[in-house]
Image 1 (cartoon, one colour):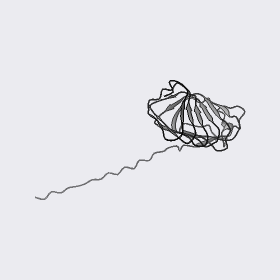
Image 2 (cartoon, rainbow, N blue to C red):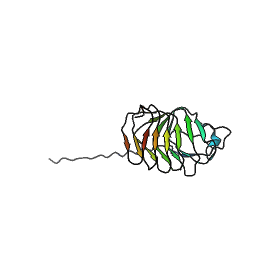
Image 3 (cartoon, one colour):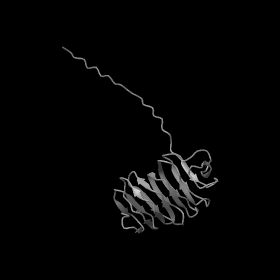
Image 4 (cartoon, one colour):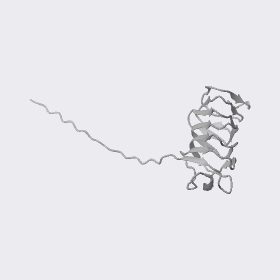
Amino acid sequence: MAHKIVLILAVTTVSLSVDAATDRTWDGGGADANWSSVTNWDGDLTLPASGDALFFGGTSKLANTNDLDGASFSGITFLSGAGLFTLRGKAITLDGNVTNLDNDNQTINLPMSLSATRDFTASNGEITVSGTLSGAGGLNKYGAKTLTLSASNAYEGVTSVGKGTLAVTHAQAL
């Protein structure tokens, strides 16, 4: 008696619609220094949204305020030729890395939750983080310049120094 084996293949095609993250560059062209002012962002069309990468360049409204609620950004970069920035305001989730390509000491004075281990690269200029770092992630320090942690931090991951100096100016910074 002969047996027949029947093989049935099912192919399913799944189509996902994903909004691509946008690179948003601060140009400080608005009437105030708030992140919620669309005219402060290059292109003047939309506000930064969760998942966007933020770039800070130019020399306008250097002390600016994140007044957006519950934002997650895929990184913060200070561009070459930028002024001396101080970022302050509401907490964000950092889903990417922080890089300083400018020669100035850039200051981040807003709370950041590290969703995973993040790279802080002070390649051309220093970075000072005076806002609290929290979350499950850790911190990798790269770049020849100094990264200064000056807040009482509560992040849970490992801290490593790949290059340059990590300065700790608060007893609970690590």
